[in-house]
Each structure stands twice: as C-alpha cells, then as structure tokens.
Image 1: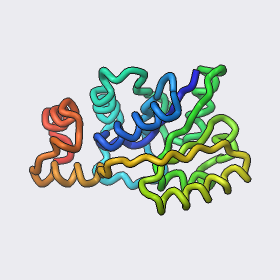
Image 2: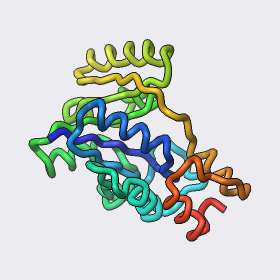
Image 3: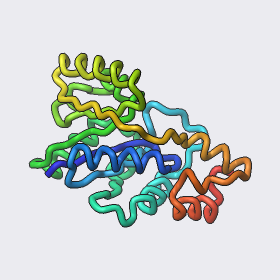
Image 4: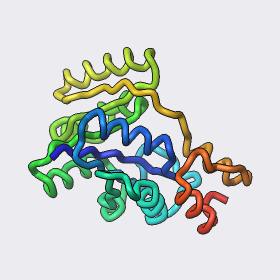
Length: 198
C-alpha cells in the first residue's frame, strides 16, 4: 500500500491544498492519502490560530467524496508540538507494510534537513517536494541531491499549482470579503457558521 502524508496547520484548508494533494496522489499513484492537521505547528506563529478540532472538521469537509483521501487526527490526539518524525513513527507502527510518502510544498522541502530528527523522517518515508515553476525545479533538484546524500529517498514533482494563502483567506474573512473561489463551499459555510477569523 502506497500511503501519502500531507501535513499542515490547514488554517483553513483551501483549494490550493486540495489541488496539490490530488497532484501528488495521481503522479505518485498512491493508494491513499492522509491529510494530517497539526495540533501545534512547530514552525509557525500562533496568530489567528483556531482550535485543532475546528481545523480537523474543515479538512474533513474539504476531502469529503474524494476517493482515497482521509483526514487523520494523529497529531491532534498526541497534543504538543506536531513533529513529523513522531507522526511517521506512529503511522509506521500502525501500517508496517505501507510505503510512506511525505508530501511537502517547495518551502518545506528546502528545510527538511533542519527538522527535528530528519534521519528518522528519511528512514521511514520517501520525501516529496513540488516545484511551482522552472526556477523552482532546479533548486529543488539540487536540494533533493543533498537530501539523498543524507540518506533520504526523494521525489521532485513538476506541477503547476494555484497559489492560495491561508493568511489571505483569514484576512479576507476579517475584512468581510468573499472567499468563494479559494475554499470548498462546505468550508466557507463552516467558517461563516462558526464565526471564525473575525
């Protein structure tokens, strides 16, 4: 079983996340993909942070009906800072026969070697990055080569993706602007009903 792990704060999850996850799913020919919302993201500030359960619920709404996609609360249940190496260890113990693929955007891929216990990440998963343009591809390929020298298995995908920012969405909501083209309609409704990011 080929299993993708796509983690993030998803604050909120948006169409860019879903499109990227679908590209990974199809190009890597995955059997399933776990969307994994963090409990506390180690690399981000807590500004505009909302409860993990609400982010989990929005992720569940966004992937509803997408074959092979599941939302995992593995990091939310664990509490504390959401370190990827711990998540991979837990998933490996739950699914020992699965090939795990860690899916990241370009920025995250460039810093993987600085994450906590990168050697565990490299041992338990194939690390995957996606480039947004030709300039990105060359930089990511160089990084992939460096990560391989550290013992990692790597994949760099070349995929045009829409650029959407969760920060932009939160700001739009705060300013009373429309977010219809940026998030799933069910996510938009949830944000409105729960008065998030106001």
